[in-house]
Image (cartoon, rainbow, N blue to C red; front, top):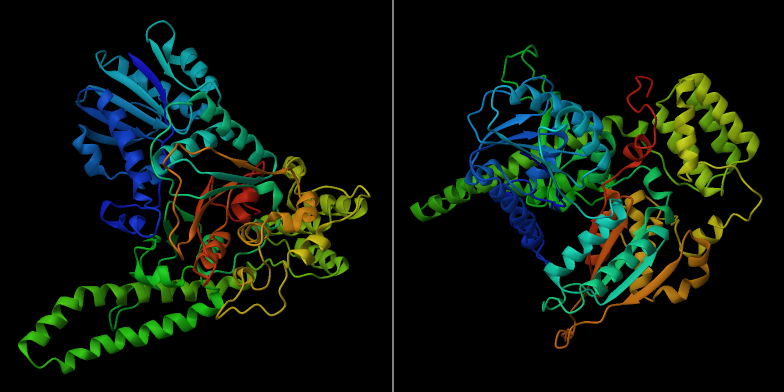
Length: 584
């Protein structure tokens, strides 16, 4: 029997069992969310009674690694794990074969090939498919056509609505089941309104079965990415943001060029330098990374230098250890000191890598005249700079000017197609559909008013000791975060006219709490806001929110959730028809 199932597991930011402790820090224990996802995974595995082999869609191994290691799978009779690929599966003496896959048609073809090959040899086996994040009717139909016609029974478990917004609302309801009902909901944008409506409808449908958990969150803020299209297009200038811009952070890991990390012994040449990328884990469980991840890159060098002096002084203490007790104390601290030194070496190497190539990646939001921008973009196209860079610049100019003049837009399109290939006409069409690229229609450009009212550009941003969120882009304040900041104090009513200029509705909803669960706030106790970005968030925006949480007397702590972590490159690539073209 084949069972087609779907799952909506929520994955949190910890990648090894022993490295998950940092999720428990702070007022909101995120480990609860991780444990809920682990429980859902365990329950699914237990429903497949008997020995198991998991066949992984390679893309999912990273996300699942954030909630469970092999030891947990082994406890639930998982004996083998394979990567999904064409042909017959490797030999495994198990009762159940479980496919963990995304709902992609091309993957269904591979699964069909695997099953038909296996069926001839192991007719008694059960096959299961776990779709992540949701099951697709098209995928089911493809499987029926290729392998399920009459010989295999299909058992489906699914929600009626298949949209990503529905699953966002469903995920937020899961959060409320774990952390209590969120009393206030604010939102901006069309998608935000839709998600809020779905949540309120779900709450009404389950009236009478509310949990009795004291609310952890005071406020939920839903922000549609469409409200702030500009921020992801600019280059993030925090340490973590630049790592993501240049090398890409995936599931808490980054792969880096190995040369800087090679430990050459004295007298050895470079013939044995490693060729495999250096894979490093990045999260706040690492003390140094937690300290520098949100700093502007220009402040990272001084922080690393200061840390080097501290570590050096700690190692020098061994000369002062005279008694047996002092020597024993020094030896006990040695593992931590060695880990700190290794961490320092890694981040010094990363900083050197970034410094070597940063200038080619900087795309900033400086307020400059259009004809200078036009000339710069023309020069970049003439020099055949990467297409992604060109598209980010063109889209940025379009967003800031409420579109491009018809003559300018036609010129850019013609130059891009002639230089990079006519296949990119579909990419340009996609950018127009997304609202990133459009012709001017004669309507007023509200961006200068928005920029001035919300103070989106700060001339003298302090990168070393920041006093404003603008430090994350060396002068530009992300609109999304400025809206979040103003909501906390003095409130959105103070910027009512500006909110009307931004895309989509803005709204406020209140959810009734069960009796006895109204929070009695202690004097000086901070409020907690969950900020949910619909359509993606950048690491620089996350850094800006962390900064706001740490500001003295802010009275607010922020927890961030999103549909995806993005940067300008990944965002534009998701809209490109052929993102892997060598000309990019």
